[in-house]
Image (cartoon, rainbow, N blue to C red; front, side, top):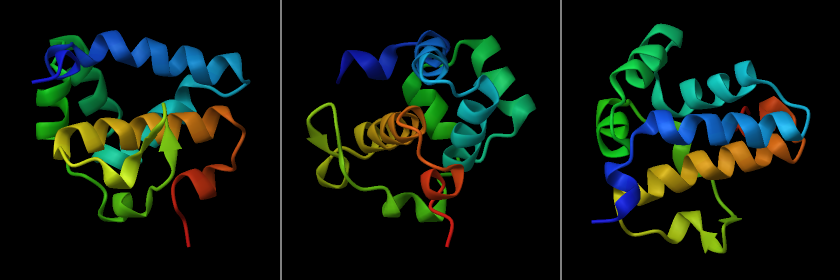
Length: 114
């Protein structure tokens, strides 16, 4: 089991926000990306953060977007579509989405809109 699985998502969340904000994006945009991927609305995300759910529990409670499989590419030197562990792949999906957001991609492209 990876260490990250037991980490509280509330500890990762500010890192995602900081990465996006350093590049001129907003917390609201990070929340929109998380909502798209997980199905959590604003209240559900706030609840997950307040309860300090582990990353494993966070993704277990999520309803993964059916278009998540369209997320491809490399993040942190790892090709996300090749990750075998389902939980690690979900973590990498979120990493990739936040990375694309921080790189200035249009929200429609980040969210894989047709």
